[in-house]
Amino acid sequence: MKKISIVIPCYNEEEAIPYYYDVMQAVVKKMSKKSTFEFIFVNDGSTDNTLGELRTLAKKDKSVRYISFSRNFGKEAGIYAGLEASTGDYITTMDVDLQDPPELLEEMFDTLETGQYDCCATRSTNRKGYSFFRKIFTKWFYKIIGKMSKTEMVPGARDYRLMTRQMVDAILSMKEYNRYSKGLFSFVGFNTKWIEFKIEERKKGKSKFGFWKLLSYAIEGIVAFSTAPLVISAFIGLLLCFLSFVLIIIIIVKTLVWGDPVTGWPSLVCIIFFVSGIQLFCIGIIGQYLAKTYLETKNRPVYIVKETEKDLK
Ligand code: UDP
Ligand code: MG
Image (cartoon, rainbow, N blue to C red):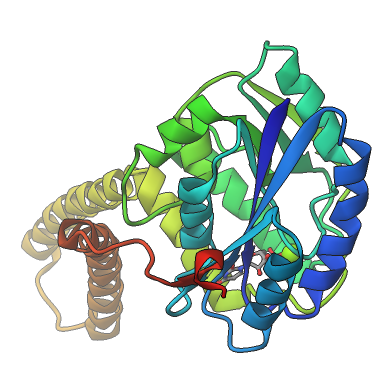
């Protein structure tokens, strides 16, 4: 009998947790002949009663474990902690809002049982329940990162995927501090089967990803899996050098032939603004990479645990 570990990052999800647990019991029952389950909830520094809910669940059900962080470390850290703690033969991560359909788990399990695949991943073909602006943002993000990164980024890919122990160990062997799971999953390779589904709206609670969090997540992804922005900024620099060289020649020739009336002050100011803007922009790009390198070299832990189910008396 195989054991499935389910890693569930939770941030202020007091409403969603009991509901999620109840829904999952049906799946556990349905698959009880095939596999056993282990739920690993990760409390990512919630400020509501998430921890209380998790304690209650862990007290009444032995298959429920939890890891509680000392503060909010982000979803990626939650996934990492959960994967590290997992003991199952197959491991999956799931959002607690049930936007990842539990009924797909059996199909994913059967796929891995055939032995042909190391991973069965899901992608949503729509983005129901998300704002118009976010849909556009996501679409463009995948377009841009698709072009920039050598690692394949599947549009609409969820973190919801069932993986073998071997694949998870490979992911855990990457100790980087700036973790972008969608990229890491893809980077390690292995045979992956994709299943598509239509996403539903969040069942309980509210989305935890506002505009700024999403933007910084997107930049994280690009910086972690592509150095193309550096090449692009170098290219812009080269282009401007060439342009200024041509301009210098034109100006010299013009002055020699027609003389030098003092005009062109506004255009000069515009050019200075434009070029210094581009310079700052490119320095900003370099700064992003430098900042990430800086954080990596500090070797800080990805997360800090305050409490687990073992602390329950
Ligand atoms: N999450 C987390 N830490 C955070 C933000 C989110 O653990 O800092 C969890 C959250 O509780 C949920 C999952 O990540 O289980 C996905 O979050 P959400 O549904 O808000 O994201 P969205 O569906 O808007 O992309
Ligand atoms: Mg969600």
